[in-house]
Length: 479
Image (cartoon, rainbow, N blue to C red):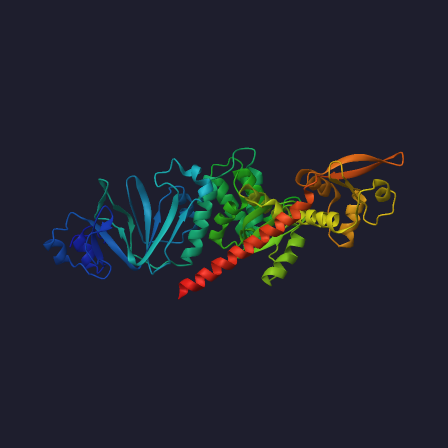
């Protein structure tokens, strides 16, 4: 065997060193059942695989595949050691081989930030951890798109002397934040916000945060990197401690949820990610449904949606758990993000809250004393004060009669919205009637207003009958 500093560069050298390899074309294995089928040197020669790509099976091995060249700046800082590094001319030092398996993972830029990656050869992928029995990587001794795959370093395929996943997560976060690095004028807030997230949501020490921000600034071409060195120390300063996810989202023009997904790589569990969807029901008044984890929480008061303290009580009542801690400023950003994609649900007028109030008004108009003598009605003799004008067959009553009736039934309402509903949906008109020489302000309802109640009652009965018939048909079909 001929070795170049002991580094395998042919299929027979890989075989002689005891590595399990498989022939590939266009990076794909061509031997059926390749995962469990061992291809020894004689089989390579007999089947004329000598010109094929060599795929190293990664059972018991890990290949850290660097797809974005920006990551290489941070590998130099955070990787402890690697004895087997290779690549090709267009992407040198792009593969780091280690002994031992690591869970497979591909790190990609979030969809909302993909436009930052449009000029990168490998698209949105930053780095990939390939490992395990069903994975393989093309190694030196092969060609990819006409380029030789060559060693940059080969001493041995050693075990990683540390926590490989943890160090890779720091590398990919640094890579993404470097690609997204803020323009001049926003860089100090950008770095301060990053430090704020790491300070509030991780157990990193001040020194670790300081070093992370400094390394990020230097390798992102920040001319004032030295000014960013104490960001971890200053992260808890009252003037800057509120700079975190919302500020980063503002600078990057994306959602808080997208920013949070980047920091999940280093173990940050953003409370805002528990809130995933929002619906508004366009009734009168509006009400909302907020998805917290797997539960939809109904919110009848829009003001409550802006108060995380009040919302926490709903989480306790609906999910039987204590709500996660969210700062008021962060909650404002979370709600703003959810409102961008809020689902609007139309609600039939007869299902709205104020329509039920309307039915109570109709009930009052129809079930209580209706007098055709307005002097008796508005002179205080009639308890309910409803006058039937026989000339136009319209009903007249005072607003205070309506509100008194609703209050007695303990039905809550907002006066402004009540009037708007009476005008828009009940055809009511504000007018005056003359009683004993004095003009009195009243509300006039159209002659068919009493029929609305009958129509809606009939519609409900028809709906119930239809459902009953459908249920009977299902029972019949079951037999």
